[in-house]
Length: 124
Image: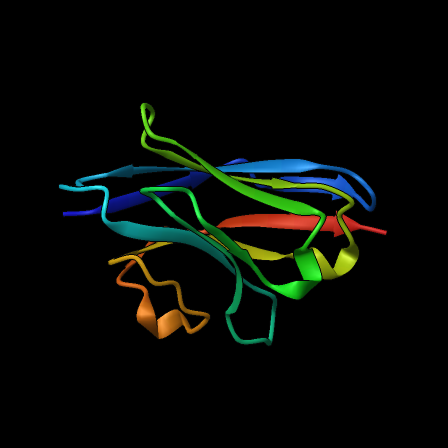
């Protein structure tokens, strides 16, 4: 059973930085894609970024390019999301996700595994 456990959310001022972590357990291979989605109140879940675990290819939604960085630590089975130059519109619950295979998708329905979410609030 794959499990994803996020941590690192919190309250930060606009322009500040925050790093989220996601520990993954129960995986049997490295052939999968992990990433982050976010959901603001009253809005649909939105793709933020993804990374191919084997090889490290990354993808980002346009609104976070140059501000957010996704990475993974194989030895620690941990996914990270470094967020910089945060804006109030980045405020949302952030979810760690995973799917089997090597292809990323922007649709939440394509991801089989979800963490419980961690709240990020950016004050102006």
